[in-house]
Image (cartoon, rainbow, N blue to C red):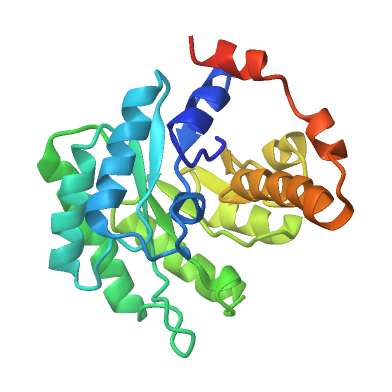
Length: 249
């Protein structure tokens, strides 16, 4: 389930045969010249609608923390996201505060319960993914991560996700703890394969902002050839414009 950051990248990925896509908050923010987590709610919802309407495959929405702290506000915002056309959305437990990077356990569970209630109230069939962010915000505690994911499942999350897990034993432990609910794993580097994760029981894989980073890397490297060396070598290694055009017919 790769992560496009705009309509063009969504259509390109769908044309390659992926059965589902997911938005990326970081890739979306970078495309607007912002840091991750800085996009306003109205633009985020419009982004969900644009991506969902641009492809014929299901789209999962990276809704970060629901653009709110308190459960009632999470409920309101998730309700708005549920009618944007997405097939699923995720709610995470990170605060954005380096000194206190995760919401307290009880508040985190209440936020997930509010998201579940909002999706039920919407009347739409939208899958809820519960995310625990400890491994990417400086709190790599497997036992606490599992405690949170199990609680999120009990609060109504249908898929569980702990971005940052790389060790096979840790991933297997999460899969076992929340079974039979499916587990999503983030792959943002060359540390595993689809087959290896499937063998561990992982049911869903996403790449977060990694494809967006790959695109930014290509841009930066090609531009550096020009500004630093006065050459255009990297431009000779790009896909042809005609091939890109065929994607958008």
